[in-house]
Image (cartoon, rainbow, N blue to C red; front, top):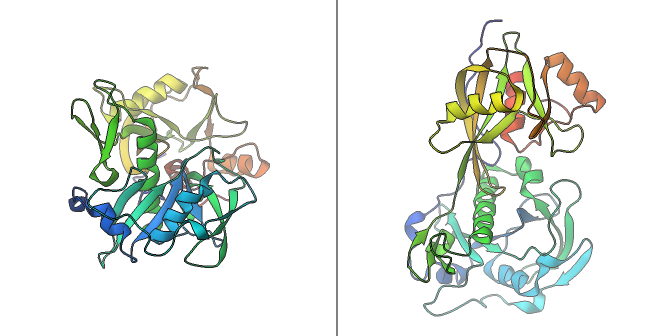
Length: 352
């Protein structure tokens, strides 16, 4: 079959345009204090890779008082169905004062066109969120409105349904929250680090070295053969029925294209020739940048490694539709570039 060149992926979930990041504001001595004193500031609550949503499935944006009340009351640890009254924990205008910046639960995400700041508040994660399935619900009584039934939802599960504005901000918030959780100490000397630049860096308290959020490049590829069949794999660690495109991390001293060929060969024994860039997507679980490719196989014999990959198969379009319809194959979630690569090959969205 003649190879068809397809356009690059665009408008991927979690990779959509967002507000200006306003990096020039991060070093301001009062940037967070001033933002929390401004009633126009909007705050996104984040914990354990998840977001607080409202009853309509949109991000539940808070004002500074509501965010501080939520933080003070510990609503993040509420279990399913629990009620948390945070009306008495804060009042409008009850924000930090003075020249010192607030502690490391606040992150500056950017600024709206009108100059209003956008923040995230980091909440504890004593109760990990489910990646899929029912959210961890909580009844939230906020000072800026009536009782609201909200829910903590994993960004993995709801990212595809958020608008471009909220998806971009949520992705940055989840990525920064994960990085701070995993990097409390200096990688050079092991001393504690403190948060700087409104949440965008950490500084070692012993040697003064600066450290920035880590992003690990990974490749993810839709591999097709001369008959335009798609190669999908079932990883050993995945639940039964879960299939996806192949993926792996870029190694030191390796180009992305080299990583595509190496990963496919290591996991399935299939050799790859031409590699074409398709698009990228931040994947903050905890901190990857997924580089998407289309790859042309030069061999078709599959021999999985038996360690990372338990099974791999070639699928025709008709075969994939039938396998999905029967429940034999569960495709990647709608928020992922993996799903976008599969559906780009298929030619249209695939109903689960």
